[in-house]
Length: 455
Ligand code: TYD
Ligand code: MG
Image 1 (spheres, rainbow, N blue to C red):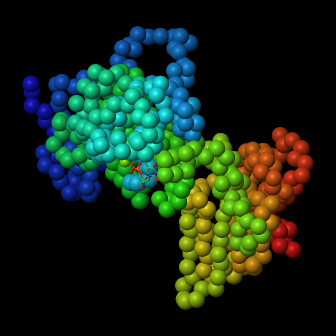
Image 2: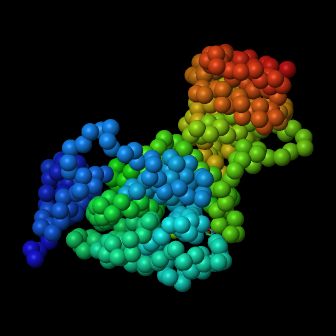
Image 3: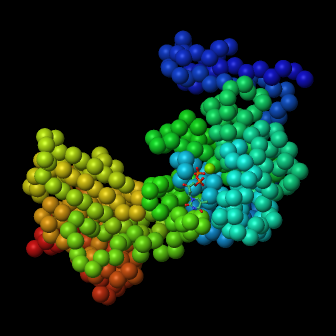
């Protein structure tokens, strides 16, 4: 057998070196050298996403659509983020911060679907630890789950070929190593090579594979990020460890729409899908409190009513503080500047704290209007009725801009018993049906909204 050879290659200019270098002598990039295999006579080329047997030219109309072969799970939230279930041979990267619940969810999927034979490969926990967790999740042990505590990709490949499971789970990619490379597990080159090897055998076996990957607080770990383009689907587990709610977001999906959202509640006995999230994300309150406004958001294709809370107070010392939990701080600063310039509220001298309830992160620009309403409500100490909600993006000149799928948001507001919704005048209302009992206030500028709300 010929000796496997590896070399270090600069990822920005392709320069090669026998040794690792901190700085590339050719393009001066720092930390750009990654170990790569240059010749391995044993490995056959594999083209990602295409089975090696499918070499004949076919008419496109004879190709069977993949959707008919999806593996459908009992967990509706997971099916939703996957676009209706897992496609055979697809690689699903499941990323998230340590301790958020990735292993819990994957083991739970295995336990709840006895119709599938599951191979659970763990490089992090022992058999006993996995067993303890399984007992906690679902005391009666299912006999469809096979555990392999292993980190060597060749052994994992052989085990998969022998067992022929319906689903493969790898926990986690950072612990695997390939004997083709000398670098330590968790390095960029190992992560990439191991994913490549899994991709090759999973595709040829038609085996849907979930790969767990840890992401650090900055979300920019040089691990899962480098393999996002190699996998078919990227799911991201979000949420605050101190809160009960967890969100699974699909950020890439070759077989479904992205931005799809699954919501779970972390209980003593595992993760429970949240069926009607809007009801949970709005706190039940007897009286109306100032500083609270509800936004009619759209996360993926699902409308979600989310409570936003603001606290505005005079800055005690020098520089005013700004803080946002679950919302982009730069966007908050922009909204405050619009409020000051266009409506004359002197928020520049005040502390502003913003919080999105339930530990949820919101990105939908339609939440701008509710956030501004919560800020003004707190500053003026004027409560907003809990029967009122908002859906509008706010532009730099204080205009209320239209948002996507206004009809769905209005329908959700009506369904949950809201009495009034503030939206942009510029939305396309042509497809709207009659909404008896729900007042729709159409505004052009934010001043109009505040005048109607607080006077
Ligand atoms: P885990 O799945 O180990 O996280 P990850 O694999 O993403 O690192 O989840 C760990 C947390 O979940 C831990 O703090 C305990 C909590 N947990 C529950 O609250 N309920 C449960 O049933 C289980 C199994 C874990
Ligand atoms: Mg884990």
